[in-house]
Structures are given as C-alpha cells and as structure tokens.
Image (cartoon, rainbow, N blue to C red):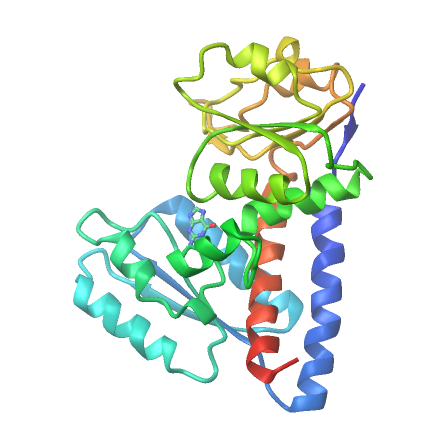
Length: 284
Ligand code: GUN
C-alpha cells in the first residue's frame, strides 16, 4: 500500500518558513511584500483559486491587492491596469488568473507583465530561463511537485520520469525541472501510442492531463512515486485526479491525494516566488 504524500503538511512547512523570512524583512527593511491578483469575469473555479491565494497571502504576512474586473473589461483596460501594477512599488508580484474571457488575448496580457513581477513564470523571458536552468521564478505547480518528490526522499538522478501532459503551465516546465535534476524524462500526450506501457516504465510518474481517472493501477510500476496534478470535477460534484486512486495506491510506493496533494503546493510556491521578487528588488 502506498504512503500518502501530504501536500497540506508540506505546504504548511513552506509557508511557515516564508512567513518567518517575511517578518524578518519587514523588521530589517521596513517594507511590506505585496501580491496583486487580477481576476476578470465570473468563472467560479477561478474565484475559489483567487480566494485561496488571498488567504495564503494573509497567512505569510503579504499584502494582497485584488482587482476583480467585470466580464466586459476591454483588452486596453486590462493592459492599463497591468502597466500601473508594473510601476507600483508596493506590488512585488502580479498574477492574472487564467483563463481570461474569450475576447481577451492571454498571450498579449502575459507579455505585458514585467518579467520581474511575473510570479507565475508565464512570461516568455521566464519560460526561456527555465529552459536553460537559469531560474528567476520557478513555475508554481511543477516547483510544488518537485518539493513533494523531495519530501519522499526519492533521488531523481538517473530515474525514469514520465510526465503525462504537455501543457505550457505544467507538462513542459515539469519535464524541464526533472531533466535539470538528471531524470530520464519521457513526455506523453494524447497521441502517445501505448500510454500504459510508457507509464509502467516510470519510477516517477506525473499526471497532468485533466482526464479523470486516466491512469489505473495496472499502468503503474510497483513502488513508483505517483504525483497527480489533475483536478477534475465529476458529474456528481466530487473532485478527482487523473489517477485512479483506489487501484493506484495498491501498487505505488508514494502517491498524492486529490484534493490535498499538489493543489496546496502550487499556492505555497506562488508565495515563494513573490518573496523571491521582493528579495531581488531589495538586493538580498
Ligand atoms: N489558472 C489555473 N492555474 C493557474 C495558475 O497557476 N496561474 C494563473 N495565473 N492562472 C491559473
């Protein structure tokens, strides 16, 4: 039976250490650290994520500035706000919650966030830095996954790592972080010929496709570390991951639950990036 990786506990440790460092910075430099969160429209899932981000800011001692804009906000209005936040000394990090309403161009919006305040690490400059291993900001969800793998004491170097999913937010940067730790990385996606066979080779398996219960126990190697980034809402209202937990936990060595696995880590890493932005600005 797999050991459960407790994302809530690991994220609480990370946030505790951020809170301590934030308090020290406040005392020594007399400054507060601020995160601006921009949400456009009424997507209910986005609303929950944004509320959780605000709560995390409070928990670590950051100021949070929320900008809840109406659905009909124009591209120009949104870019004007971003420009203002780029130039606001009290704002160390800027996060524009995705997805944006269809009439807004996400690419243009992300490109207009100052790379120094891009705590999601979505700006092409930061994405490029991730590619060459010269990180300013680590992409939040993949960085959280790396912390969870580390919490199991598993060495990545030389291991077979299989990432299922090739999104810009998770799959691609996840693969880079594992590669930089000298894992042998395979990226699988919807056109992969035999997904089960690829997954069965994995010592470390990361699922990030958004397909409920895609990965079953018989696709998992005995003793593997299984990280489930999926967060899918079923018709009955329940949340489930991309991994079928009941069958997978019988085979895996370690496994993350959904919820309570990767989710809390993503937010903790966002706090870490905001702290990094503030420290870089202070030259520490
Ligand atoms: N929407 C879903 N995940 C994320 C994320 O990590 N950052 C932002 N900005 N939007 C998201």
